[in-house]
Image (cartoon, rainbow, N blue to C red; front, side, top):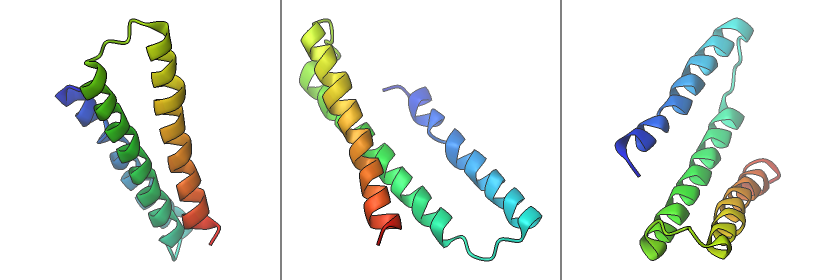
Length: 96
């Protein structure tokens, strides 16, 4: 991945900080514990996806020309990693 890919990850936290400050002053929110845990588990989800993509790039060297490899990458690596991260956030962050 290039440096611009990693820089694009900084856009979401910046927007989140600005919206949190805006809503906190507009609606006078007292506790940000739920928002903090949602952001934390969201970051874990993104890290899991980046790690999975990195390991696939090491293994296949961006050789996704075969339809089976592309389907495996999309449905198993990307989809499973993102859904697993969402499951972890909901299960351990908000249902307990």
